[in-house]
Image (cartoon, rainbow, N blue to C red; front, side, top):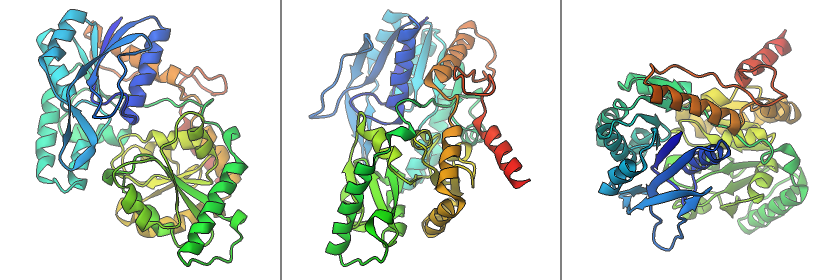
Length: 421
């Protein structure tokens, strides 16, 4: 199969959209398919690659949206249509389309090439968060225009599917995300790293006049991993800043870092972590907190769970499919998240961290990238054949998974019921 991927984001920018595209390209290479990528060029002072897994990357110019500098935008150019016309793909994969992806959709339509759109970024939610509410309705109108000329739209969670249906986007099917359970694993936990965090945090406490009766090495490590940008609402972690029994750790970088350092003076900020440093940081947390409420999926929760770390997140969007309250984490009302977070942390500790860690790992069994990408290729096949879009079950390639359509959420529910019996 020949697959053209039009990506709204790609390397060197690292985020959920980019990571998903990379995993798809790796799977296409393993399965000997042909592919190319059309993506935004690198921003100033960034290096860009011309190939990935041997597949060519066709670049378009990049601009930045006012007030949303964490989301550089690829400018639609005639090269999009020309590239598709020259490559003659069987299917066009639109990765989180909005500007460049929309151009890809219209170009593919004019060339009679079927498109599969992957809905991954809640632009309308971002518009609200950036105080651009007037653009919310226009955002949905624009999204309908290009999504509804695609063979299908794939969404990563039940909440997102319902939202798209509510706003008139048709042929929406479910496609989640895989997680590398070898890379993200409880065995990566590092007592040395935890000690470094705790001692750095203690130094910051003393410097800012915070006193604690809780011994340094007995404090729980609570952390966030992700972009430090307004749409992530990381400032909500400040609800834990003065807790004597907690050490906050913030992993990531972004435009809000200076503001967050001021709001949480005792927190440890690691900057962006890559390679083995990232899974080591995840596994070394006691509790993971995701603060943003505009997540269509939230891959960070899956990575935390695979690392054996229970998660707390807003009861909105993708996290609602990933967290079973009381088993592998807690869901909090988005409007009162700040006020509820301290008690939620208490609840995780009261439930028993060992039990919640075990359930966190169980919740991602079978959700490999191999299984998820195999599911995606089945959707491609439906589009190429012109068939009516139908949900494709996730077939597990994990021998530890108890069924071929591995549903970790339902199995966790069974565990919860048996525990209550």
